[in-house]
Each structure stands twice: as structure tokens, then as C-alpha cells.
Image (cartoon, rainbow, N blue to C red; front, side):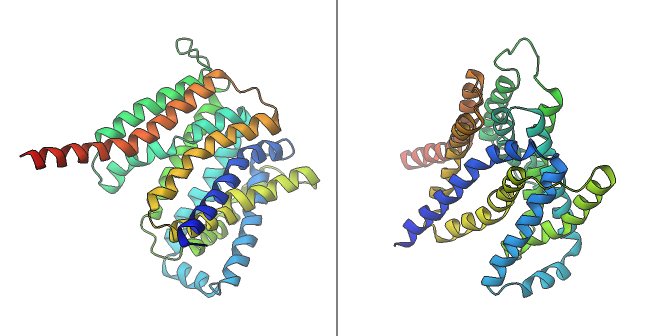
Length: 305
């Protein structure tokens, strides 16, 4: 198989798995609290990533990378998995899966906006346009299309879902300073975050009780939201001849996710969800296309002159 074909195979595999996790979140949350689900999923992911690194003969890098930048991994571990997944799962606990999924997906719009003050990057017109369109989509979903009524099914759920986008964006901004092996770094974040998760759980509730369906869903989340799928995605990017050709596959994820939510969870997908999600995906497309269009116009003007 050609390298480019392998890249697509790994990329599509990752997208298909990520598309199922919103459904797994809701299934697991019928049996466990958000904090208990974070504990199960993170523990599973630590084991999975440890096995992957052992197969790759990279386990020795774990202690070396941590010793070189312990405070860095303290930051990443606190942001994700501890805070991000706790907030995200609580949002899913309060909202229909279709709403939580769509609202969380706006992190890709927020990330370039936060990069302006935190990384010193320039604010592009395309980012502003994309943000306006995306958050119109957010408002459409949150109010179920009643844009003048300002009534949210769960205000706390909406706030938590949008907060999760902030935490995830901050996590990736912090990770721009990471020079280590990405899989090792992910494992270190989970290892550092786990004690905070355990402490919070033992001081506020109990360890998760055994439940076959809930445990399987939690393990599934750990494998295919946090662990294995991330590695598949990294392999796809590494094998891709053009990174952009793989990253555009991400646009498929929320569409497939809505399908799984309707099929497995039997949620009635609101018309406002379709409209809002279309606006969010359009915003992501505009964010990518408008700068290219601007460069094309500039080159045309230069050639004319």
C-alpha cells in the first residue's frame, strides 16, 4: 500500500473512532458520574499508551521527558485530562449529546483567537468572520433555534461545554512548547493528571462500582477518545504527503457523530442542531479558505502589476 493510501487509512480509522465517542460518553454517564468516568477512561488510556510505547521501545523516554520539564507536564496534566474531561463529561451529563458535541467542536474556532494574546500571533479577518459565524451556530443550538427567546435547556451545560473549548484550546497552546515525543507527552499528561482525579473522586464520592455496560463504555472512551485513536492520527499525519489533505477529514467527525447519536442513543435530532452544526462547519471552512483566497488575490494583483 502506498504511503499516501496508508495515511488515509489511518486517518479515516481515527475519524470513525472519534465519531463514536460522544455516544460512548452518554452510555457511560448513565452508570457513572463524570469524575468516575474520567478515572476509568484515563486509567485505561494510561495502560494502552504504556503498551504502545513498550512495543515501540520508547518506555525509557517517559522518565527522561518528565525529568527535563516536570512543571510543563504538571500544566498539561491539570488542563487535560483532569479539568478538560471533567468539564466535558459534566456538560454531556447535563445536555443532549447532539448539543454537547456541537458546542464542544467550536474549540477549533477559539484556538486561533486565543493564540493572538497568548502566542503573539496576528488576528486575521478570517478568524473574526469564522468566530461570528460559529458562535451564531452555537447560539442556534443552545436556544434550539429560538434566537430571541434566550432560553437554554441547561444554562450550566452550555457554559460547561463552552468552557471545555477554552480548556482544550489552552491545552494545545501550552503544547506548542513541547519538543518531546507526542505519545510520551500524552502519557505523561495522563500520569500527572491521574492523582488529581483520584484525590477529587475519593474526597467527593466513591470509586466506580462494577457495571458491565458502564465499564465497557468507559474503557471504550479511554481507548478511542484519549489513547489509541490519538496514535492512529499521529501516524496518519506522519505518513501524509500533505497534512492538509488529512486534517480536512476532521470535518466529517461531527456529522458522523450525529448519526451515531441518532442511531444508538435514539436522540431526536433537532432541526436547530443541523442548522447550528452547518454554521460551525462553515465557519471552520471559512477559517481555512479565506486566507488562501486572500493570498490568491494578492498574487493575481502582483502579476498584473
